[in-house]
Length: 397
Ligand SMILES: [Zn+2]
Image (cartoon, rainbow, N blue to C red; front, side):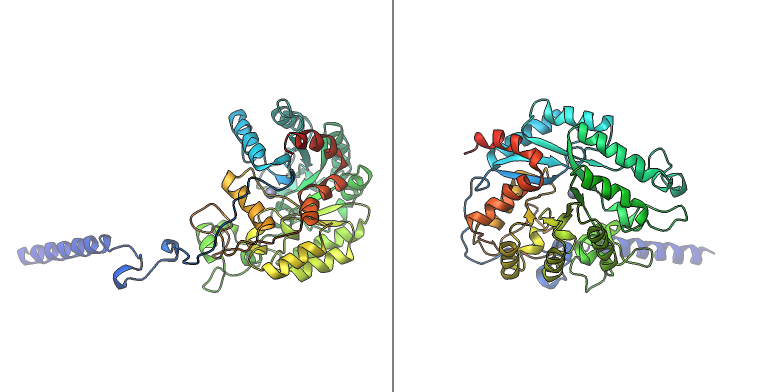
């Protein structure tokens, strides 16, 4: 009996020692012959290339893709701070895509426009859920037969409350469901009256379809955004429960085709910044389609020759969007990307590249192209911006 207790205590002691040794294992930092964890990788470039110093956008800009309700949560202090950033970076007007509907629009307008009437504009959003319960799609408003008609009325009201267009979030196609639990289809003809109403109201529709292609691929050693998906597995849309990337885009483009009088923005470079020939093909085919740059300079800047040709060829169809408000350092990278010839620079202020493990190259676009991307295209497609823009830009010359 005593021998067994001694043996047991020796075993326990050995086990504790083993745990202690394991716990003291040095980090996988690649030093002294150790392996290196991808998340510990911090390579510093040895290239001797000079960064260009810019003082804001070359021409007072309009950012057509920003989120002032989602990101600033209606904090007045943060708004004041960000307007100072806009002044320094020469962003004349930001379009907040978070207007929502009804009285929520008034609340958002009060937040943005009371102090800064010329610096902000708003897009409305549909309310798919209404008073329905989160996990019960059958109770959602979008599954009631009069949903499109009522939304059309709400959008008319949104226009009267000051909105200039409609923003659709990526949940349409990837999250919102039919009564039977299947995902709503982007080209479901039920929703045609909504797109129709947008044409009548002259309400452009900015729609976020799909997500980066890597998010639709397995999270494995071949995935070029493995590090990001490993950190945020909920961003993955890989698997039989999700439509394929190309199916989502094809459905969206069928809507664009069926509604030639409705103006669409394919947000985030039409959801396919990895495939510029495919964007070119749909821009050629659908004159009512435009694209914007938000959160895609990482993607464009790693294919600098193709991207420059693309931006010059489709200079009338591309608008500035940033997905901000962002830290000032991030915004500076948009100007650096569009305006300079700089080589191999980070696309984000974060220490570890958050959208793929690479760096980018500047486009060095001619002034007439910059002018279109920065503000002329926005003023043509969203004429409601002109008065605000002219007022705000006057102080920035
Ligand atoms: Zn966005």
